Length: 125
Image (cartoon, rainbow, N blue to C red):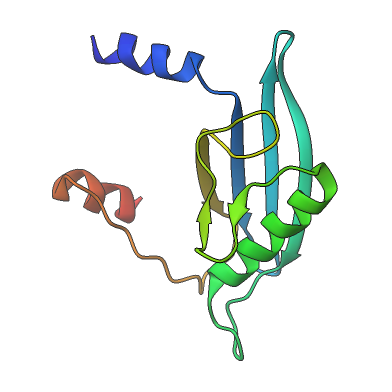
């Protein structure tokens, strides 16, 4: 039953934003789905901001998203609130967000979750 629910939810996805925080560059990649299937809608990037004076990786994420917005003409984030626009519509928003880190060490991450054992296992991996 859980797999069926997941498949049904995935079938409703129209747009997915993927972020990768690297050692020097943060990439924002947007995938969209239409009748023909999934396609790359755009790619933005910005310097990763983990060192002073900024020392906040999220600033690099928002900068990469802003570039992606400029390149695609889509509104993906509410800059004043610091949140993604959800759900996806014709000219704005995303339905899902995934993030990875390809940085070699030094990137500090906070993991939060509902089930402690599962969240801790994910953090360990």
